[in-house]
Length: 191
Image (cartoon, rainbow, N blue to C red):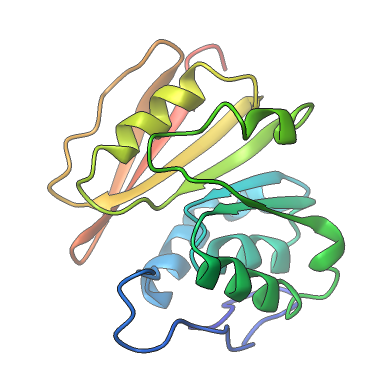
């Protein structure tokens, strides 16, 4: 795994030990394709990286000019990898916040005060596949105050996942398949 573009281009990211089942990193190929799609939205945006794993998504965003990234994960190995990988990006530590929170039941209420006042332009969630967590996270975001006026929410799931087409405030705008994985894009109805 590496950072694909921007100020930290080509830097190799710290990864989990081979055979680790705690973290399932998004492939470089899929991440590169995703960032080619969302590139115009990255510069100066505020990013929320849920189920951050190695922090590859957020580090790529920082490398490409994101103003701030908040990484959330629960596993100690993930938190350690995120801290190491943030340091690979020039200015990364100053523009990052790492929160330990169990997202196993969605976005916990205990997490929201730590995000108080934060409004995120780009939210990426990569929960364990086919675990119902994607829907819980979407529901929590749909009813939260952490979204900017024009957010983009991206959920990574298996390609046979059936995402909700619409929630109260969010709606599915696009889907892209990469191997067995898919990215589901959501926008805000009021945008």
